[in-house]
Image (cartoon, rainbow, N blue to C red):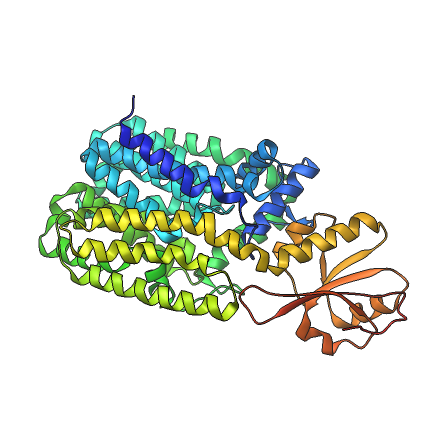
Length: 517
């Protein structure tokens, strides 16, 4: 029977990452694409080829769509169903880290490392949405832990497990599932001066047989069905070009990850620099095997994605388990007040800025309550010898409140779910109506519509449709309307949650009536 701490972790993780996922609808722009593609997969019965908005979607491999579809089958087509099994992978990552560290360290270290991981802001965010990154993180974590155990125990069984988990990582997000664990393992073995010997010990043939057994069935099926079209879109564009070139809508600046670092790794962002310094100064990075492996893990992920030309914040998610281990090691040894003072000041600024923004927007101030908790936790930690517990617990409680209170209070202010619902209701009543986007697209609205394709058109095509006898409903931003030279009527107008833009639904009445404000 597992220890009480294991079950405490399981319950807290489940409450934070899984239970409130039906309280808020999907957010643009990536998550609704996965939700919609899985919905279309369930409706069509085609579990080989992903479609989004009724067109091929070869961005990612199939596993994430299968996971979302499984949730739909169990809970229905809704956000909770789509997110459920994805969030479970976040829970499993927390528990896997605990089980590994309790084997290699002590129970207290294992528990608080897992709690630190659970508390990290982007880990919580990405474990709460239907996207592949947390699934990838689980399988990469499992692969790296299996490699570590295989190396230290001289066990072929663990090496084979590393290949197995890399196979599932590859089925989740492509070749990075094999390349990234391999890179980290090589860095670690070089530092251990054991690369050549270990390469001879790894059961490569059996390992790649297992890896292939996981990867080849779907990749073979999709290549058979779509051939070069899939190869060009998935391999060349979404893997090679993303790594070497620029993708529209994706940043490429060398400083991008440094600029996003502080919010990604909240609430422990400031502590990491002190941990690196302490580990190097005390030379413990060379004497503590787990610490060395964790540093190789963290910087291996960072270097890989920093080298890639295309960058997104959540690409760094596989580094989070290693970050949690490093932070826990540091805070069990060090009592420097500088990082905790900086952390308290940061949350004070965030609380002030958040309150001002909520007042400016006219939102319920109840939504900023979660920001009070980590500030209290940081101030309380200043008076204690241990910083680890108050910061971790206060931030986890803040994130629970954020998901259970803040997001639901913002839901009534969100324009896109309302627009999507209106379009769906119109489509149910009007079978011959046509629906479009005008010089604008919203995956969130596509997912909420669920009554056919929502194609994006230009102004000339929109003008022709508005002048025709076919009932037409078009979604666009209000600032696009002055470019239209055709009669139309505004059916509804909704202000977007964050931006200054307003979304409108416009329509024609046989092309004869003018726009009515």
